[in-house]
Image 1 (tube, rainbow, N blue to C red):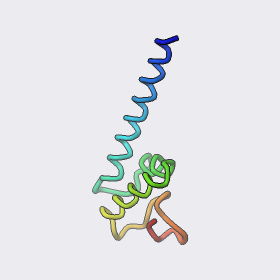
Image 2 (cartoon, one colour):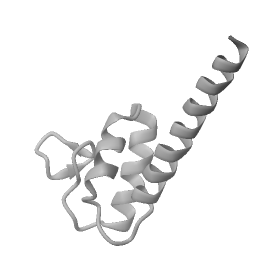
Image 3 (cartoon, rainbow, N blue to C red):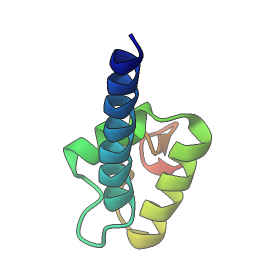
Image 4 (cartoon, rainbow, N blue to C red):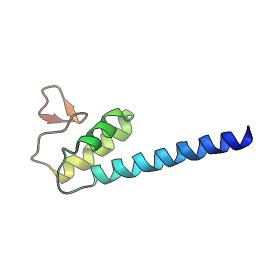
Length: 79
């Protein structure tokens, strides 16, 4: 039982690291704010973390339309 718990813990930590790195790479990129995987991860995160990511994207792409998860109201304004 102890070995199974450790294995599950390692899998959870590896998943968090993988998706966390993928998300961080997306929000700090300089090529495009419209990466589908990055948008999907960002839109599912808690509001404070998502807001930080959207702020980073907005700083890198000030003239672009916000991706899903970063738009408010009319879909043209950043959160």
